[in-house]
Amino acid sequence: MSVLTFFAHAKYRRLLLTGFSAFILVGAVQAMYGPSFASFQERFGLSTSTVGLLVSLHFIGSLISILSSGFVVLKLGYRTTLSFAIALMALGSLGLALSPTWLLSLGATFFIGLGFGFIDAGMNMLFARSFEEQSAPALNLLNAMFGVGAVLGPLLVALFLPRVPLAFLSYTVIAVIVFFFALGLPNPETRITENTSVQIPWGKFIGFLLIFFFYVMSEIGAASWEATHLAPYYGEARGALYTSLYWAALTVGRFVATPISSFVKAPTLVLLSTFLALIGALAAHNVALAPFAYMFIGFAFAPFFPTGLAWLGQVFPKRIEQLTPIVMATANIGAVISSPVIGWLIDRSSSDAVPTIMSGAAIILLSITTLLWLRTRT
Image (cartoon, rainbow, N blue to C red):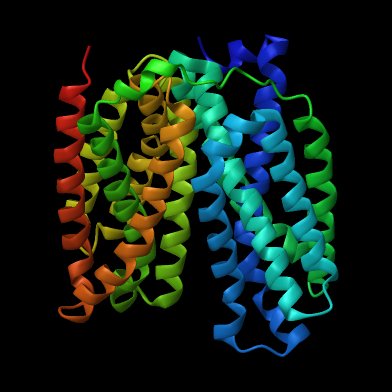
């Protein structure tokens, strides 16, 4: 059954529309920070390093809420948790627009981060539980909406420049509208049966932790260090442009993966995604091919995260609310740890080491994914 078929059912239509709107919101706000930095610096007299704390507070808040999302959903249910999360984002964006001090702006960003994490984890879990065996296409389309938001967010800031607070006020209005949609979300049963405590195959779960860790290391590593690799050959401006094309390819890839994931099993699609990304990483060693190779990596990795979550839900259907937040937090830790490690390796060699590092990470990822694919085959 395709996602379009689900739209025909009122039961799913509200969920899909609210989920897509919420993910456009979270994608937009994360992408609004960078274009707003200059405005905050002028408004509060900040240095470049200080204004970057906005992003730090956002991710601290999101990590806290991702880790606690399973517990909160089990206690309050999906509808209350996600409505509260959207309200937090509306409150935070209003704070960024109206805050008279830098400290209050940081607090507002922390609230946005909390809401961001609850939506990111909670909506993925809700889609996995609601669509069950058909969750892969729904999750791919849901996560594609994050990319749509990441494109629209900077455009919203640009629309109101130099009056950036108006951009965040507009965002607040949109978030309030989505909040009222969220009040009608379904609230599926989240209670864990008593005997599931002895049913976790820890080897498989550790496998999921590892593949998400190395996936984020590979995906964010390619996006973060592509410009470093290409700048000596193409210039900094084109290096930055090619990085944006990487993210565009990843977003397009999720739209393409949506119908494919309707008939290709989730484990197989994740394995294929990893294999194709490795081909792209190897091709990036050729400087002439590298810009296209990085785009190919983004396109190849597109279905990995949402389809991987669908796979996790299929293997642990009674543990979605407990295990998904741990897996997502591990993925975030992968991004935090990998960036300085990759930078350290580049410092001790050269920027030409980037595709070699990416290839090594992709080989590890493919190996672990293959083992997990073999262990979860039915």
